Image (tube, rainbow, N blue to C red; front, side, top):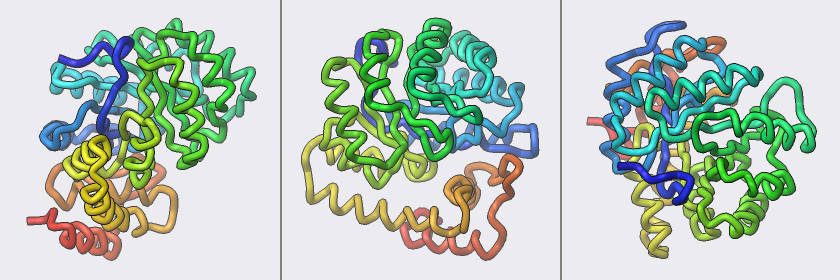
Length: 306
């Protein structure tokens, strides 16, 4: 069974699952089922749905709930399921958190509300209001590239007293900021400190991080699990070998020209592996043939294709 996330830090690899889509407001249900099993077979330690990789802000509330229900039912307590509830609407975040709790999720994840940029005092007040209303343990999600507002270190220091907050996922890509989080979190040994950018996984584990929420673990979960475990052991030779492979995999994210290329690359990879559809939530569309062939070449070079 899964850990009590309010007593023990979440450790390991927690893939931010993409949302397999068949059309604008329809899940690729067989794809969801195959993807969940593919990820779990890689030995991961949790599953995060409805994050950035899951295109959550572009999905209808109905579809988000369907995904939560299906994934929680399929995982069935084999490992923790974390559900993203970030929204511009306070009420919708609370409603989705309640639904996630009833469906069997173990935690919710919340980033800074986007569109109206909050100052840090306003953000702190927001957390003081919303966290007690969320029905599960809470992980903060620092994603300033998307939300335009970071969780400043002083804000993190202020929320340490909120026992319902179980940790933070940092996708800033700023190692100095991550080191500040590690220093602050020494006051909360029960906190999980997870990193988003996958090329920083090993380095942040050395700094004191507890794991990674890495998009590439959607299609190559074992690589990330092996890298995390090698970093925990301090096996630098193994880390160097796996890091080189990870950087080779990172070529997938350079195929497209825009920020959407990261999710397109993940979905294209999963499609080429026969796991799920690569249909994108609008306003984006899947890679076309030239980009798809470039992704195929990278996967073949890694030995991931039959």
